[in-house]
Image 1: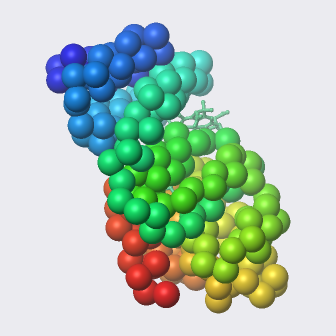
Image 2: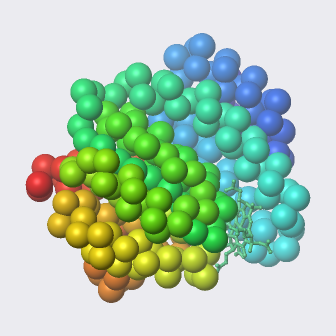
Length: 212
Ligand code: B12
């Protein structure tokens, strides 16, 4: 089973088939889905990132690790959602324009679903106008923005500006995250919240819904 870090290893070496088998077996054995995410999957991607940074891994290794991660996450997401409470609020999530990283965003989306939120996932490389359109569909929306590149984190401010211009800023809450994002950056661009991980994103979103 996954107890010995087998899922961690499968993701690290990018073996999607093995990741799928291990995840299925672990879920059948009633392993805690969020524990699999926190203790094996996220640490595996952290190690992938570390290896990339010190030139042990290159883009092809990143891609196959990301594919293995996605395979496991797709199996786990319904189980996260099944353990959730009643619908808590509406979240529109996406990775900002110019940025194709979606592993962290997908994790946040899954955890929010598991936390009882209705989640509308706009995908990656999402222009500011798409967030505005999605916010127009419902007054009480949380917009969740993800960025992994220092070059794209500036797009978050563009989304906030676009919401302001559309007269929607007061009706929405904006939360942001991604590796280069900090609380200071969130304050600087006027976001309503920031968290550095998917579990905390749920608490953050709950707090904001309660604050409305
Ligand atoms: C996997 C990966 C890729 C994969 C992405 C696959 C995919 N489908 O996502 C691929 C190979 C495609 C890729 C491409 C590139 N990448 Co890349 N990539 C990574 C890597 C190794 C891991 C990212 C990841 O998935 N982490 C795991 C997840 C779980 O963590 P996370 O994303 O941080 O998310 C968590 C939190 O941040 C938070 N969170 C995330 N989003 C949100 C949103 C909200 C609202 C909240 C509240 C919280 C939150 O919760 C998440 C879960 O806990 C990072 C290294 C790193 N250390 O981050 C580099 C990294 C981000 N990439 C980098 C670069 C340079 C690139 C490329 C430009 C490389 C190239 N030369 O082509 C391209 C850019 C493509 C593009 N336009 O986007 C750099 C960025 C440097 C910088 N300063 O901007 C990094 C930091 C690597 C490095 N050190 O050089 N990459």
